[in-house]
Amino acid sequence: MKKAKILALFTFIFILSLTLISPVLGTQKKRSKGKSKGTANIGATIFDRECTACHAKGDNSIENEKTLKLDALKKFGFNSADDVKKRVMEGAGVMPAFKDSLKPAEIDAVSKYVWDKAQKGWK
Image (tube, rainbow, N blue to C red; front, side, top):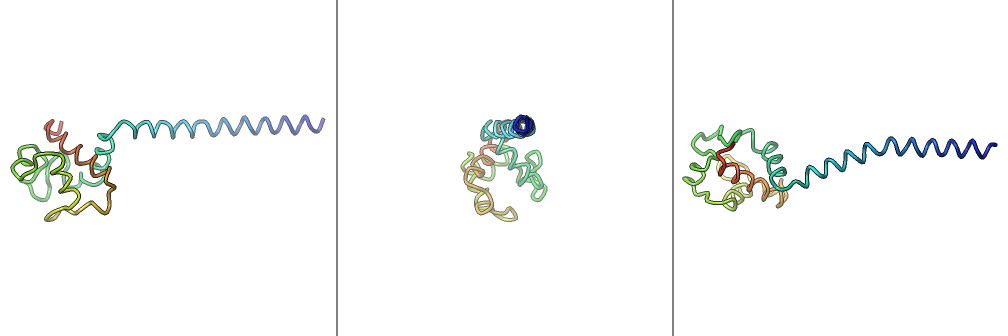
């Protein structure tokens, strides 16, 4: 009789632990699926976190003429995502360099995001 109670208690605890752990594991899977949607999501997240203070919607709150709009980018010698990447890495003027604070893949992602948004008129 005592063994049956212990077995029942063990079974109850096991089922309870599965019930509590399953939602947590499900949440982690959902998060990883969101991250795996690609470079655009990573780039947008990094842009929102690191760049929006000065470059909201592709504008420039510090130097008004140096926006991230396609015509301004081209005017100042940015003709590809690689040109944007170089600026993100090295910085210039009041813009800080991000080569020490962002991973190479993050720099790639945010550079491609900025170039893609510029191509689409920041829509």
